[in-house]
Length: 332
Image 1 (tube, rainbow, N blue to C red):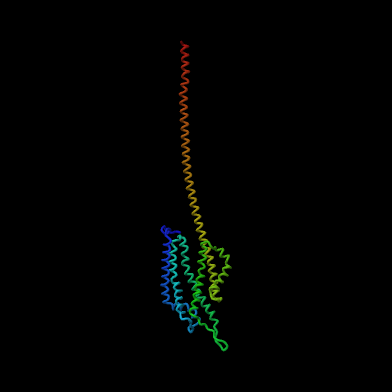
Image 2 (tube, rainbow, N blue to C red; image 1 turned 90 degrees about the horizontal axis):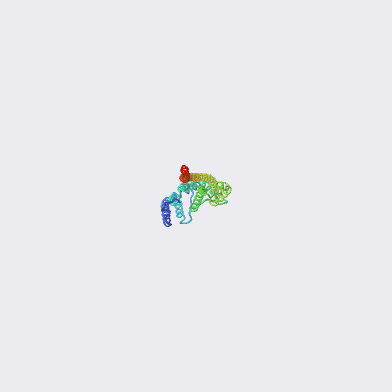
């Protein structure tokens, strides 16, 4: 990991202390937002009940059958809202703990997903609140019947706790499913999945999407279709994001290969230049050796020539003396 020198040698205890501090700030932010949300809990619960109230009308009511039901429902509403509000703080602390251990390119690649996660969750919650809930509540209220002489009236008396549980389940299911592009794009960046593989398994993904929607939503076609279709759309978006990620990764790999090739060519040129220099030095050494050898040969030849010249007179001397002595004897 691209960490500083003191971070590389940081003991495990210091990492645990850092993690504890980050979790402390995240939990503290959660408790503070929980207190603020509980102060406005009636307004928050009224906001969640509004889709049903607009369909039922102002003359209808909600009931609770246990003494503690409303209190614990308000606590759940406050905690549910506090998780939404404190999510940026939690993600910020998570990023502050993880970021020092990442490379620069990994931080730049991971940062968009950090911002996209809460935005996509809010988009899923907004979809279920403004589109799915009104349609689903109208469907469920269509089973009400007016009383007559032969039968009794069927009228909805919604419980506070049950309604909140249903709303939280829907919001959580849609928000979780809207994280599909983030998950698949990260898996594509890691090389776990490919865009072509996702495209080939599209038919299986459609079946899994509707099965997942059937499990997470109430047993009605409106909620199931309302969740299944966005999952399929998000799956197609994930394929596009995976293709873009693969292209970026391939481009980065090509750039690295080009840099490696340039480095290798520079090394080859350096080695060639070094070899030429060595060869030139070697040639100069050989030339010097040849010059020295020729110089030695010249000196030897000169020595032999001088010896021959000196020997010549010595050999011719006695013969001349001999001739002189003969001439002297003849003259006498």
